[in-house]
Length: 204
Image (tube, rainbow, N blue to C red):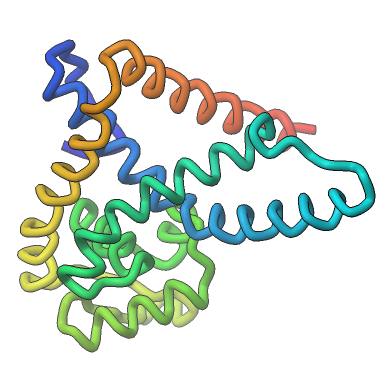
C-alpha cells in the first residue's frame, strides 16, 4: 500500500498510529532538510532582532514551530536507519521512494521530493556504490537519469521500514487518540491549503 494513498482509516489505536506514522515518516523526511536550515535561519534572526528590541515570539511563530517539530521527529527516525544502518537522510528518502515505485527518473524525483539535483546526485552515487540502486541514462534523452532499486536495496528497505514505523508509532502512541486524529487532519488540511495556493498562483 502506498504510504501517500492510505486507504485504511480504522479507529483502532494501533492501526491509526501506523497510518499517521507513515504519513509523518514521509512528510518529515520530505521537509526535514529544509526545516533544519529554516530553524537555524530563524534563530539567527531572532537573536539579531532581539538586540534591536524587536523580539519575535518563537513559540507563536507557526512556520518555526512546524519546522522544529518535523526536525525533532525526523531525528528520532534517523536513529534507526542512520545509526544502525549507516544511511544518510537523503539516501533513505531515495530508497524510500524507489522501494515503492521501483524506477523513477530524475524529473519525477524532483517533483516528489525537496531534494535538489546535487543532493540527488550525491545520494545516488553513494547508494550505487553500496549496490543498493542502479542509475541509467535513456538513449532518447541524455539529460535524464533513471534510478532503480536492486534486490539488495529492496531487502534492506524491507528490513528497515518496520523498525522506522515502530519508532514513529511509539512516539505517536504517547498522544491521545483525539490528538492523533487532529494531527492527521491538520497535516492534510495544511497540504490542501498549500497546494490550493500553488494552483491559484499558477492560474494568475
